[in-house]
Length: 314
Image: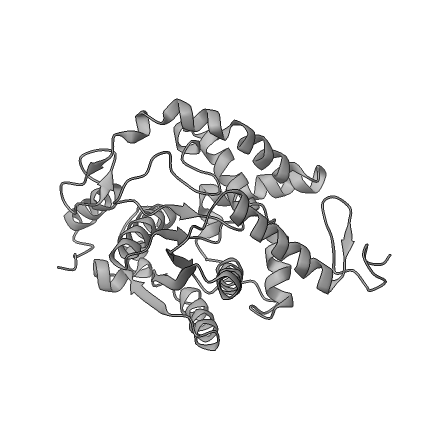
C-alpha cells in the first residue's frame, strides 16, 4: 500500500485508515497543530509564551512548532522553561537534549531545580519520605512553572500535553469524582482569568502520542529510544494509561472518542463551575493563587519540614 497522496512508502496509518508517507505525515501533523492554535485562539498578538520543556518528544516538538510559527507571523515571542526535579538517569539525560535543541535553534532556556528551590532533589525526597513521588512532583512542578512563568512576565504557558495525556486526565477525574477539575481543562485551561495564574495552552491537544513520537523521530528531535520517568509506572495515571492503551488496541479510536465527547460538554462544565472556580485566594504562606487558605505546594512543604526532609529557599 502506498501513501494516500503519492506513491511513496507510508510511515503511518492514521486512525481514519489513511496511510501517509514521511513528507505528507509531517504536513498533516503541522497543519493540525496550527489549526488547533488558531481555532481555539491559543496565541494572541504580543503574547510572551513560556514553553514548558523537558527535553522529551512532546516538549521539543511543541517548541519547534511554536518557533516555526513565530518565524512566519512574528506576533508573539517564545522562550523555554525547564524544571529539574533531580531524577538521576532520566532528567539529567533529557536536560542534555533540551540544552542542545535550544542552542541549535537560538532559543532562550531557563532552568530551575527542586534542589535550588526546595533544598533537595526528588530522588533525595523519595528515599526519606513515604509520600508518593508523583504526588510531590506534580504539586511542585505546577507551582514552579506558574511562579517562574509569571516572574518572567509570560502571558501564556505552553505545555506538550497530547491527546493521550488529556484522555487519561479526563478519565482520572471521572474515576475520582472530580468533575469540577474537568471544567478547568481543555486546549486552554481555566474557567476564569486571574493575574496570578498564567493560562496554559496545549497546541498538541488533538495529536495522538504515537503521532507526536513519530514526528519527533522523523525530525530528529529524539532517538528511537523512549526515555520514561522511572516513577511513572507506579502512578495512578500509569494505571489509567495502561487501561486506555488496552482499550485502544481492542477498540481503535477510543482516545479520540473520549476527547471529542469531552470537548462537546466542556462549555457546559465551564458554565456550571465558573462561580465555584472564581473564588481565588492568595496563599497565606507564599502568596501564590489557591482555592483555600494555603496552596498545595506549601501544604506539602509543611509536611516535609515537620519530618525534617526539606528546607525552603529564602
